[in-house]
Length: 365
Image 1 (cartoon, rainbow, N blue to C red):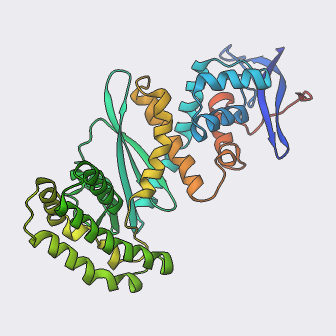
Image 2: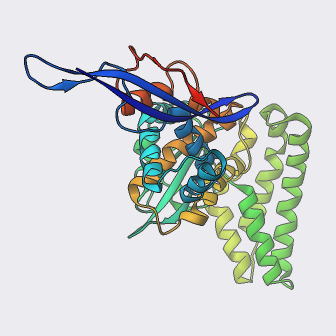
Image 3: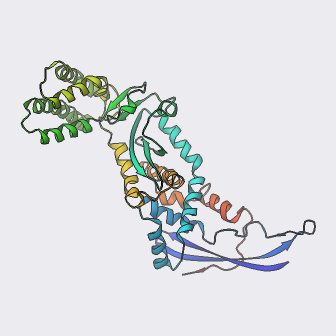
């Protein structure tokens, strides 16, 4: 038996600010009389020399504010005098993602049980390949995930049990889904405006845009006054149907107008679904807002991510955005009490925390 000592470098986060917090653990190294192996008391820190609050703070800066890991290393070194290698940061991210695996799966279950699901996708360049990041969102939860391609054949299985309305853009992968759908009318209006700028003298296209904007303007005025309530919105159903019939039956001559005629004909049953439901939006802003958070990360990490690193990031980002949508602090979630990240990091780095004993006074700055 001999005495051993170890220091754990951490942060103390409290209402008034953040400060460095270094804890020294003193213990004895024992030897088993039977197997002759050496062991330390349960609770003596093993593995990382960094504490859970420091790890949570680094992940918070990376995911919540989009600061890359190398810059976080510089920030921590300059602010707290704590040197951390980038390789350790990647390990932090993997451990936090593994801790939230069950919570991540429960977010998907919560979304599938809802009455409205917003979906979007965006490309991402990995180190040696290319893939796509998808997002499912509601007003209370966000679920990001990675796929190697933009093909949507996985969607029926993934959305098994969903009985609500799917809100999306006009990507054809959603066409095969057998469920009520609402196409984003902002996308349609944006496309019309772009084509009007390119074809300013196309009278047919101008007329089509005016008719559509007239219908949508009245609907939005009702929404602004009464909210997304079908008892107020269904009065616009007849006007919306008349617009669709007019767009489909009118004989257009310009190719760009015929393009929109075919789109209205194809998606006629999916343009004004929200008029017949409570709480269903007429746009896909919820998913697009969530996707902007990943786009911010992609700006500095595009082409340098591996499949594993982007999957770990998406797990944590899902928890971060879900906290934001629910009005909760992501930082508090990371370093919170009870059955939280603290227990996971203790187990990963130190072993069971049940018998931890701090036998030396804490030194702090």
